[in-house]
Image (cartoon, rainbow over all chains, first blue to last red):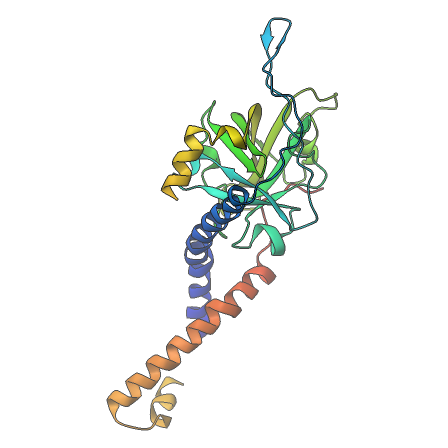
Length: 232
Length: 52
């Protein structure tokens, strides 16, 4: 009986207690990490800040490329207004569960085989949908046009959510520079991967967003970002 | 098992309740701090990544 009770306690801990505690800790860790970027003056890499036109169509300024650091090192935070008014989680290099996805200091991991942040191609990240703070718990609640912000010491990369896709767990084609296709990349895509259905490993849910613009730090935080910072 | 524990503990009824409480909190702390995280990492596979 004691053993059975212990197993039940463990499941409750795993699904609820550790999820909630980890979620709060991950929000705080993300905010603290971003705080450092405010305090320490950094040199913003050179990039083209003019909003030019190409054949009559407005094109986004070229963002700086943030090189992905060593495994498990944190290099950016993700802010998603749709995921909650205090949602600010750190992104670390690699998708190792023990050092990136399950820990309270990060929670979101960058696929090493995908492209760097800011580069043409696909910046793909993974995060839990349930348990361990569940960074992508509300991934299915995203609405077309929702903004997703990725913050680094240089500023904010702004993406807009485009569509969801449901795939088998072995479909690594979603990580390609143009997801699911073998063509040359022209756009900057942000790909979020998580499990589907909730609490299952049967399928994967994929959320694609398209790069909109880059806001350098010296211009100040975008309105939605400032709201999350104020609430956190 | 619990009856035996109750007999072994010294002191009055209230002292025993106090000791059982302390013991319970200690066991739960160890479980939450070390046993549960280890069990989750060992027995529950990550399910968020796409892998070949």
